[in-house]
Amino acid sequence: MMLKRRDSFLKESYQRYRDELYRYLRRMVNGRSQEAKDITQMAFTRLAALTDPQTLRNPRAFLYTTARNIVIDRARRRQVKAKHMEEVPLESWHEPGHGISPEHIALDRERLAVLKTVIENLPAKPRRIFVLNRVYGLSYREIAEEMGLKEENVKKHVFRALKKCTTEMAKIYKNSAPSTPTDEMPKSSK
Image (tube, rainbow, N blue to C red; front, side):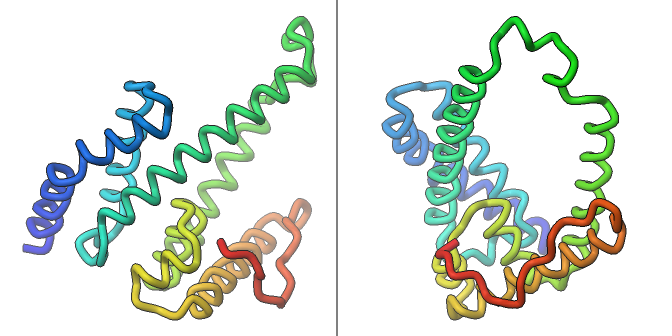
């Protein structure tokens, strides 16, 4: 029953907002049709990835915010890539030290799997808030409005989840532990 409701919600949202979101994105990406299609699909994929997307008060706002954040992230990546392309001469790319070793990739994958497990073990509400903020890029305010919470409570949930992730990762990787966050609440709007 719950699965049918979820599927119905996703199908209805896709039919209702897809074309509108695509047109908005096409304007945002200067008419690049394929990029607008890709980002539209990514936004809906992120909606579908939510545990209970049908509980969103405003799925349209979620889709637009998610899509806008994807556009911004892509632009940032292009800038970083362009900067690094200028800094590293093309002829040196094949030299040792300019690539990522298989060991480094394996270690990163292992750490990501551990982090994923830590996040999955968070209680449902803090996990959802943390994922909306850190994975989907929603601001504290946007999450507060979406979930009917005070912005300050959203900040606390994100901070506690970050602290838990950092602590758990430090227990596992004592030699290469990330720095732990301070006991001070974050001041940014994200």
